[in-house]
Structures are given as C-alpha cells and as structure tokens.
Length: 382
Image (cartoon, rainbow, N blue to C red; front, side):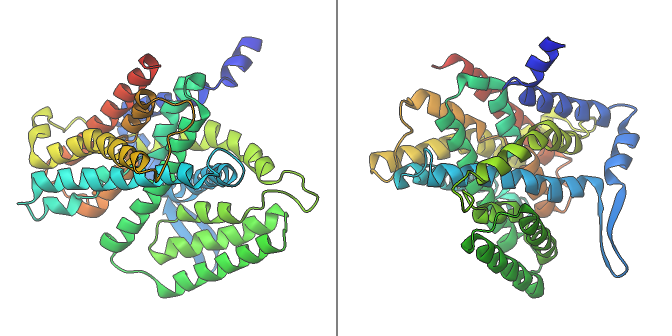
C-alpha cells in the first residue's frame, strides 16, 4: 500500500497516467470498441433551465470547460513566477514571448513554402504553429526532477503565449463571426474581476461566479472559451489582506484535480483518432510534409533561433545555470501540436477528406516524433 501511495505521489506518475490514457484512446478507437468510444464522447449533455441552456457533446465540455481550469492553473503559476518568482525580471519573461513568436512564424513559413501553389491546402498554414500544452507538460512530468524548474516555467509560459497566439489566429482567420453582445459581457466580467482584485476580495465563490459567466460569454463570443481560465488567473490576489498566501493555496487545491483527473480525461477524449484508413504513403504529400516539417523541425528551430537572437541582443536572458543543450530539448517538445493542431485542422479544412486524412496522420507523426525525440534528448543531455 505504501509503495502504491509513493508511486501515485511521484512527480512522474501524472505523466505516465497521461500517456496511458493516450494509448488507451487510440486502442479504443481502432478496435471493436470504436463505436462505444465515439458514442460516449459524442453524447450530448445539456446544462441550464428553460430558455437558457448550453448543450454540448461530452468531448466539447472537456475541451472547452475542464481545460479552462487547466489554463487557470497554468495562469496562476505564471502570475506567481512573474510577480515573485523566477520570471520577475523583464528579460526573463521576454524569453518565452520571443520563443512563442519564433514557434509560430517559422512553422507557418515552412508550410507556406511547400504548399503555396495549392489554395485549399494553404488554408491550413496555422496547423503547425500550435503547441499542445497538456501533452508537452505530460512529457515533462515523465522526466520528473531531471528538468530544472526554470525550464519547466519556460515551457509553461511559452505555451501560454503560444496558445494566446493560436486564439488570436483562430479569431482572425478561422471564425466566421464574432458576437458583439457576448464580447461586451466578457468586458463587464473582466471589469468585475478587476474590482474584486482591487478591493482585495478573497472569497473564491465570487471569482467562480464571475468566471462561469465569463466562460459562457466567451463560449458564445466565437473566441476559444479556454481563454477565460487565463483571464481569471490574472485577477486572483497573491495574498489575503492579512498578507497570508492566497493564490498559492488556490493553486494547491486545484492542482491534484488537474493532473490526476482533467489531463488524463482530456487525453482519453482527444487522442482517439482512427488510423485504420490512413496510408503511410500519404505522408509524402505537400500538406503532410508541410505539417511534419513545420511542427517537428519548424517549431524547435523557430523557438530556439528567436530565443538565441533575443539573448544575444540582450532583449532576453537564458535561465540561470541552464546550458543551451538542455534548453534545446525543451524547444523540441514545443513541436507536440496534437489536439491544438487537430482543432485548427478541423477549422481550416472543415473535416474534409480531400487529403485522405494525410493531414491528421501528419499531425500524429510530428507530435509523436517531437515527444519521443524530446524525451530521449532530455534524458541524455545534461
């Protein structure tokens, strides 16, 4: 019993759990359980009353709802580190911003260079720009204490900026229309959160109430609802009026739910991709090559190059006691596009099978390559 408890509480167990549910999802989707698996996550759940209802399939409740809590946790951790921790220096926090820029620009250019002559294919230029923060964090958890805290923070903060960039890209290029009324309600909610923070109110129920309204408004606005989690985290006070830690306590309460329930459930709901009708020969098509080279090579090279230039120009600085070799390993992990890339793929190509699923297969290959190579590299390099 003691051994089981020790294993569950180890740093690597959440990562193992995430990988287990990823492969379980693939197994379910590519076996006789496929129909049961699909029907389960596509089953509609309705929340609300009378004329005010939100009806979504289970997988969308997970992706839009529960993952907003994950983003809340990441935002809280990032806020603490910027205000009191290792990112309070402006040059330290600017490093992941430059990395995120490089990680979006370089893959997009690689994809465009390969697919520029095909108008429909070019709709997917943003597919290799995304990083799946949940799976990238899962690989880091597998590595346990082999990765310094400063590098974990770099990946977390880069992924936040990367996802904010993805949300902007989706809003500008892949959203048919935005709801002005919903956006106005979002702004009112942000103002309410600002007041709660200004008056140093530490009643979590009030933040939850405003946060739920913000999430619903964001869901209806056309902007990705997970952004609500990041916004809420900005306004949670660091301390109570008596100078007792508050933000850290909220984070401590939420963290077990995220690593032991939300992330494994997210993996199980999203990793179920049918690969039975996919042909390996299709990976040499321009769309596949654009995605694979963009995600696997473009992300790591873009992140590293932009960060390296920023450091040399003294616009940013490498975390203390970190060598470029170890830093590059983190850059490799940013190529895990997986669910974020699949999400953008669905928006870009409207789930068309014109490429015979070569686009989805390419996302899987690039993401698994980035995860495996990044993991092995970080295990070897000191």
